[in-house]
Length: 137
Picture 1 (cartoon, rainbow, N blue to C red):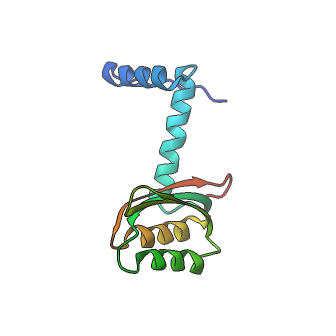
Picture 2 (cartoon, rainbow, N blue to C red):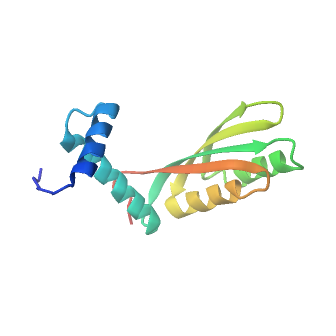
């Protein structure tokens, strides 16, 4: 393990200490390690450097929108190599939440998620990517 020294202004240190307290970190080092890992993952995703990954796609849509439910289901079937599992939840009389587990190359998973999220009558969509260890290109 490496030791490093950094300088942080008082305001940022206060925010970090509040996060440590709120999230129950045992110490500042653990919090900074988690924040560093998150930052590195985000940078790798932005740079397109995510190799094999697992993605969690969640989206809310209007199931009464013309032909949307069929298009979404068809899209998942056509990408059965990426779409591993889904959970379907009825939120109210017209809106549904779908949570899909995706697995594959990062760029393919992101492209598939973008095609789902961009459908008309999909009100909300978000993809969270978890890189597989040692999978960065």
